[in-house]
Image (cartoon, rainbow, N blue to C red; front, top):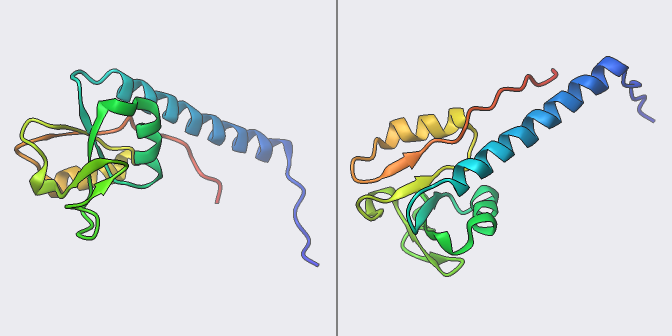
Length: 128
């Protein structure tokens, strides 16, 4: 048997704050996505974040962007999947990723022909 520590009130309060920070971030990401102008936007990635935005925005999602050569050039959820270099000029691409990761990707890609929309920042300390 493994003895598990009994969580203290402070520990539970800290976890509650961390969960609330995650929920707040998702609500901010939702608001950002719903506020996007134009008829169609793209989504960076075809994983859980991309699927969540597809469920939220439906037909407003016109395409996905994926750096995986096995995904780009195909379709996903009946929408084209483009490599970053193939995104239609003037496209706007939402990034349902942690802000720090999205910022690194945006800096690395440095797109000139389309816009990467960075997600809201997320600040919550994790217990170590």
